[in-house]
Amino acid sequence: MSRRPSGSTSSPRRLFGGRPKRRRQSRFWPLLLVACAIAFASPFAADRLAGLSLAAVKLPELPRVIAGGHEVMPRSVAVRPANRPLQYRSMPTCSGGARAERGVTCLVDGDTGWEKGEKWRIAGIDTPELSKPECAAERRAAVAARDRMQTLMGGGYSLAGHGTDRYGRRLVTVRLSDGRDAGEVLVAEGLSQRWPNRGNPWCG
Image (cartoon, rainbow, N blue to C red; front, side, top):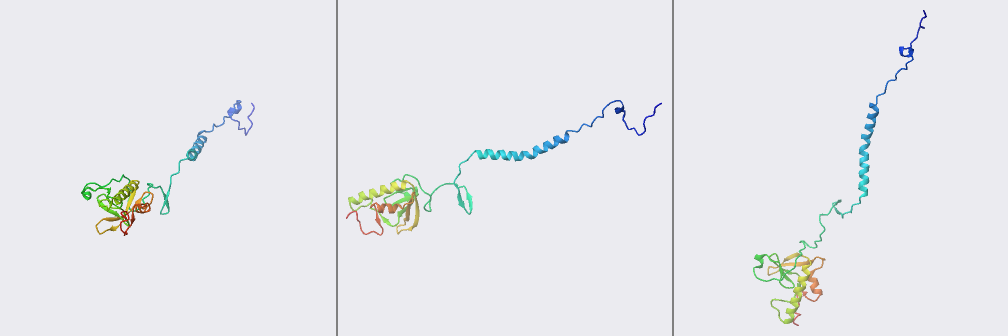
């Protein structure tokens, strides 16, 4: 009876011609690594795509105003040359009484009017008298001065106060929307004289 060589470590599978089976590697860890890589890269990819989409849309730039060292978007674009807001309205001529009580806004003549029930007179000028003219020429000049002032103020104006006169009227400068002084316009066009005046030039 033959004896098996000592020290033999052959397994029964090898004796019968079988091959040893390799341990099947688990696929769990590779899949986990791939999932982690995708999760890590996703935020960067999203940011990149968002940047590309925003760059493709060019929005119009809005004007900015420097305020206190910081850029802020303006709430409105408006020009207010005097200390009151610009008034845009057709300026009617005055009629009827109780103007203060009614709170009217109207024009009496070339240098006098009412603003929300407060009577005012333009400082530094003197237009022809419309209510009590000394001659027909003064009346015609007074109508022309009033109509011209009505047209000027209808384009937008503001009133800047300079105290009151001896009749209690508020002395004002009428500043037009284009920055001009309405009183100076009348003087330049020959429809008013400076105050204090030197008589009545319209009745010669």
